[in-house]
Image 1: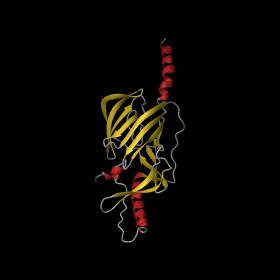
Image 2: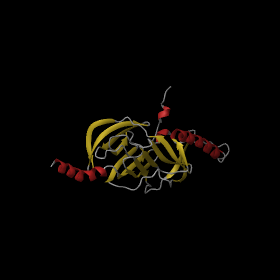
Image 3: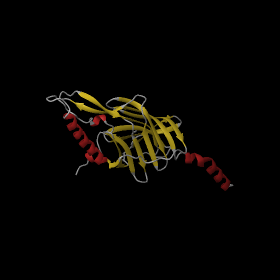
Image 4: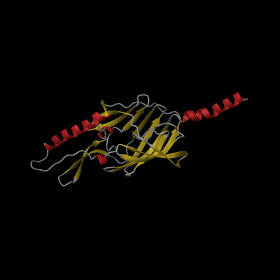
Length: 255
């Protein structure tokens, strides 16, 4: 009799447990950095990998470069329409995160070790859709996040680069109200194959940040040759406070 009960339990619960190992989540995604921007992000995942993609907004958003004059007035130069979508690919097997970054018309695959976020679990809970979620807080690259994750999908993934909890993150917001992700649709079960993103060049994160600074300096020199003589011009990269990542781990390291 005991064997029969065991068989029935596996028969009924096995498919449900397997469905938790893969799925698709659609997020609303609001950014209030240099400009207000609302779009949709999608996350597909399985036990080993996840892929988050920021989709195009219904409002056409262009890549912008910010410059500031001597009086502190900021101007925005439109560079080009973004046609390659920002993407974040997690590989647990490789312990690596690959992100698609488009910068000055070139697409990079930026590689880094999966970030470790020191999450603090809070006993507070709430429901998001049909999922029971628990609250957690953590600091990631200069921003304080409050997130809600569900143990009912016991995988460490989430939107963008947020990860490392014992369940998938369904909602996340920073304390400056500049970044907000919220799940709108969750579908569990088999999904399409998750592929590592491809770009013109694969580069380590620290090297990419240094390269961006160098390219901004080179761009400033080129633009300076095209402005009228004796005119005031100052070309500066976007302030870190206008970016999702304000400070990086190696910038806080001490000897």
